[in-house]
Image (tube, rainbow, N blue to C red):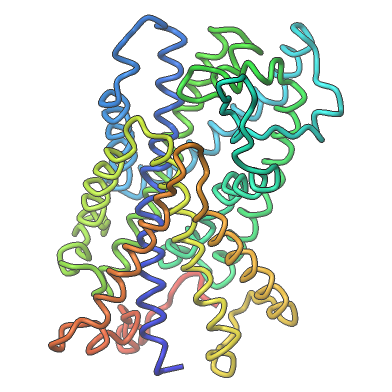
Length: 423
């Protein structure tokens, strides 16, 4: 384990950091689509709303606003986290109270057959004779659609990134990962069912002209003013969620810099003297994520690549420790207080197969006729950078000096200190 451990840690850190680096602009861009859709509903003739630079400015503003609470104090972070809960509750009330009432007063509800209806959105091309061109099978369409579910379920390692700031971390962190995954699944399924049955005109939504088709759904169901109101709350919720995601990305940036993995690590691993916040790491994330947002201006292909790369990167960083735990580290691994026990091996096998499946599927083209998926280029670039940094010659490569995560608190510093919440 000692022979391969540092390399595996190095690769895990790079994939995880790169994944979170692309998650932030992906979420910011998605949230921008909600905001611009709201503006198009209110001001349908405003030409500026169609400009790519305008969307980029909104995305950049979203990232900056998301970064501010994470650079001020723990108080602002705490209230940001609470704000996400409040806005999510408001949105859930819209979905489960307002939507059924609105549907009953308009075109009614969809029949039960909506749960088995399949639409292949890839096969939208038409030849000169008016025939639909079969560009991808229904099976292919279904498989590449896994990005939707995968995008919902990654990021549960955010609990780990905050472990050093958490009481009773040995149990609370694992509990957060499980609770987050289960609650996400439950709320997602219930929300999807409600949304499907309250839908009015499916093809009208598919052919909608707003940056986000959700806007067309809302206009049909609750009218223009109602749609604008819901999109406004959605944008606020998305802004707060971007702040939470930025918090995790900021912490992982600080952690990998502290371990000497990033260039200029000494600069990006510094914390403020008053609140001990990694502001330099936040500034790095702001610059890089805003730059990434510029790459997706006016391109749904690039946006899909960013979301796919984020999902692939984070999941690869999960796969490495899972496989290492059950192979080279099996005899040396010390289970924590919260562990899977006898379920460890079967759960690890299922998780590994799922991640491998995601890796293959998310590399495939998702849109036609734009058949190129940029995700392999992004992931390939990350791999080249990580391996290049490891094998770089002249005693400069990480293989000559990197030994794994650094201990930031020594036994001497802990002597005689009572740590609240530790078991």
